[in-house]
Length: 263
Ligand code: CAA
Image (cartoon, rainbow, N blue to C red; front, side, top):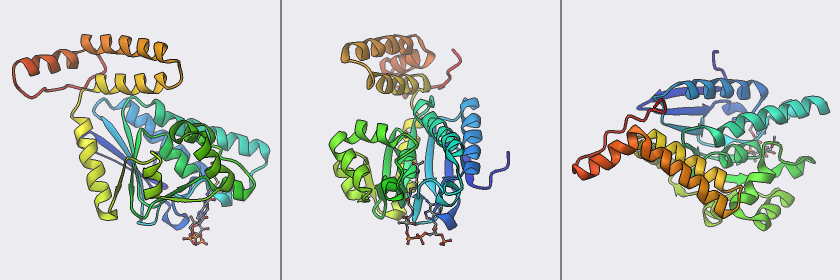
């Protein structure tokens, strides 16, 4: 599939999807979501990709939400199909075997915030802002925002953001635990890639196990969560990477993780 709404790149085991509709502040339309789904298929099929980074083109916006021009044309059935497509595509970020970092370089509104929230963590530039402003359009978030935001920052803070539709700055987002780091705009991608490379050097089996244990554990009681962790821990110990990592420590050398999920 040729991409017209995203840029998809892979280097050093790190895939980058850049939302690329700068004239509409990278708003998400159906075509962009189809292209993203295709890129996620490629990522899932490629054993060598270890981390996914998401960002927006230009210096003003990550993603300014669903494309309102397109939304305005939908009847209820089309709206349902669009919301389902967005929910599924964005939901795949959470379930992707590899870690996903959102490098938020400006507006992350509506579906843009929801995209970032489905990533594993967020780095933001100082000029970034976050919000779920759907209420101002007479609608509500449709790509998981009412579910993921309260889980991340607590119900009260999420309700205030969703009921008012107000935008918060990157600094405020960092204060409430939505964003891990706030960086100068020209440092955002360098620092994101530095972290991505650090993660990419780790064992793929253990990264996958850690992501699954954390995500699954958040939806169950702590005893069940710890059981999930125990099972994942055992799988890691049986993996080539687990054996290599422990052997490398004993032999006082750097571990050479193969990162395969095939064994
Ligand atoms: N959809 C379509 N086009 C959009 C857009 C969107 N979400 N956001 C911005 N644009 C377009 C504008 O229409 C404008 O296009 P023109 O130059 O052709 O007029 C261009 O991008 C630049 O935008 P502005 O001139 O408005 O730029 P600004 O700096 O003055 O304001 C903004 C920036 C505050 C982000 C403002 O554009 C805005 O409020 N955008 C809408 C944000 C929003 O409501 N997002 C939620 C969408 S609904 C959703 O996401 C539902 C869901 O969960 C599924």
